[in-house]
Length: 436
Ligand SMILES: *[C@@H]1O[C@H](CO)[C@@H](O)[C@H](O)[C@H]1NC(C)=O
Ligand SMILES: *[C@@H]1O[C@H](CO)[C@@H](O)[C@H](O)[C@H]1NC(C)=O
Ligand SMILES: *[C@@H]1O[C@H](CO)[C@@H](O)[C@H](O)[C@H]1NC(C)=O
Image (cartoon, rainbow, N blue to C red; front, side, top):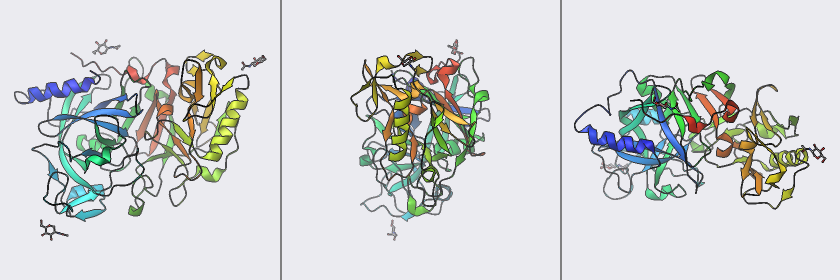
């Protein structure tokens, strides 16, 4: 079975009737929590499983790093004795900064469609439209605790705030996935709700595995350990930038975006700066431009003019390589014989995203820049994002894999490791074996 946590949730649900061993109340000992995350080979989405409802059911959700809420399909098969709609004027609605309050337009009230309830705008990053009729609710959520290095018992959150969406809103999500879990900067996103409920720091770490076979980890709280190594001491720190406008979700709300932006100042290929229109690199007052980190795209996207100069520089630096025909969605492909192999993937020019100073940069090595599309062909794993984009640079999933990203929401900083392969570890090395 793909997900270790699935077994535990079922196991604990069985035990629930006779013992409180598995699902404890929120014990003060809970210092950190984890989710196992696996890449779906068909959609390239990063998928996790969370226990929800009474009785508990394991729910598959796609990770949405900058997403503002955890939303699920409530129209199809939602059964729970602990479900509660968030009513107009309630604290939940205030915390969520909801946009509307009112009656569900269809006939009789039901789960996800109640009278006098608040509504927000759940975002599905894989279909590019907005849905403003997501009803806010509360229900039980169950998530696994950790001591930092191994998983511990599941803990139960009685009143977790989430959003209900109709079944059609799951379009584009991987098979069996019922919604997305938002890890954004706002208060009802998972990191802030967990930090508030368990009184731990508003910090979380994302470590996505490049393998579709073994899980990576998302870690809430402090002190994540990969076996025998504490990467947190080697992280490079950069400020998170606030996008004043929620371009990803609800522009009309005039709320800052829940998405994670960092301040890329320039790009170097093989250590040499490429010429970029600097105006594209800042976030303007309408929320356009800048560099966003997103699991909503499988590969990084570069605004057209940036894409052109970066790929040209890359091809120039890899001058000995044999170019081969493009393989969509990529345009720049090479014979795989063109590059030797190193600990950090194919031996190709490095791509640096230069941050607050020229000495602070996110270096992308072959393992994160080259995609093996067949036995003989490797392609530069960046896609042309076109001219008119909200973010000029989107650092997508493939470039995040086997990198540790540590978000500190209180300090508004991102700590990143660059490739963990340099440290001779991977995101799949988190030890998911429960201690005896
Ligand atoms: C909402 O429904 C209630 C009855 O459930 C009704 O009294 C109220 O007027 C309705 N409000 C609106 C805005 O339609
Ligand atoms: C490119 O080819 C030249 C001539 O064959 C060789 O001297 C050089 O080392 C090669 N460079 C790389 C990076 O392989
Ligand atoms: C994983 O954790 C278990 C339980 O603590 C331990 O027995 C095992 O040796 C660990 N595995 C690795 C690879 O560290």
